[in-house]
Each structure stands twice: as C-alpha cells, then as structure tokens.
Amino acid sequence: MSDLDHYHRQRVNVSDPLSACPEPRLVARPDTAEAGPFADRVDELIAGDAFPADARVLDYGCGTGQATDRLAGVLGGRALGVDPSLPLIREATATERTQFAHAPNGVVPAGRHRFDVVYVSLVLGGLRGQNLDRAVAELHRVLRPGGLLVLIEATGDQADGPRWTRRPDDAYRALFPRVALKTVDRFDRGGDHLTLLAGRCAAQPG
Image (cartoon, rainbow, N blue to C red):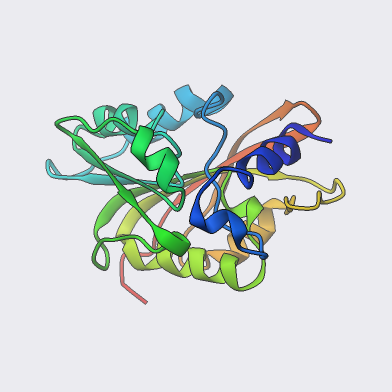
C-alpha cells in the first residue's frame, strides 16, 4: 500500500459525518507532509508574482491548517482554509490573517472570483465522478480571472489504489481548460510520484 492509500484509509476513518459517505470524497493532504518537498517552490511561485495588497489565498482541503498561515504570509494578504472534515477544522488555529471554515461536500463558503491564489495539495486524487466534478467546479468558481492555481497531486501511470487515483499531468490540464497549467516540479515519495503544477487563469471569466 502506498503512502497516499494508507493516508486515505486513515482519513476516511476519522469520526465525522462525511466519513460514512460511500463515494470517494474530498480529503486534505497529510498534515505531516504540508507542502512537502514543494514548499519552497510554492512560496517562490506566489512571492514571485504580482498580487493586489488585499489579495486572498484559498487553501482547499487544508486539514488542520499546517500550511494555511504560511501561504498568507508569502502572499502578503489573507487566507481561508477549508476542509470537509469538521474535526480537522476544529484543530486549525486562526490568526490575524488566516481563517478556517467547514466546507461540507467541498463547497467553499465564499463568493465567485473571490481568491487571487487557490492552493490544492493532495485533494483531487482522492475524488472521482461527481465528487471530482463538484470540486473542480468550485475551484473554477472562486478563482478570480488572472488568478494563480497551484496543484500538488500524485501523477503517473501506476495502478490506482482503492481510494486514490493517479492521473497524468494532462488529465489535470483537461480539468482546468481556462488555466494555463504547467508542470513545475516532480518528486518521488514512498512509491508515489508527486507533481507540482501551476498556472494563471484566463483573464476573462468564462
């Protein structure tokens, strides 16, 4: 069993109302990994871009918020961390620049085009079918035109686990046709090939 499959098996046993859902559902990245080997690269992507003074970043599937406040600091703005697991959100610690919210079914409690940066780490690989479609639609909805999308996912041609799907890079590009996703970096961990993808959303809303 790979690290990701082991993590997901533990995750769905968390005592929360969503754990009974028979379909694969939104999961947060392993908190011990945070952004893992890509932390510095993610920070460079955000810090090296131009954002307004009141910029906001969404940490989608934040778990207990291990990376959320760091993202706000790098952006020089504010952050919202969301997760469908209420027990994990209750463990997150809000700060002056960081807030957390429960997101049942992955629905973000924010308006359209609200975020300049959307950060998603080890989330979409745990989703299939309607759950994946719903999550992708939410990310499209809240990312502002011209905003930056950052994805960290398990990719490659390995066999899928019972609860984790390893998609090629192009599959993620197809999920976000309005975002110019590029492969930024790769890392192998515990038999899982992790990939960092990032790109700007088209300037005109679709």
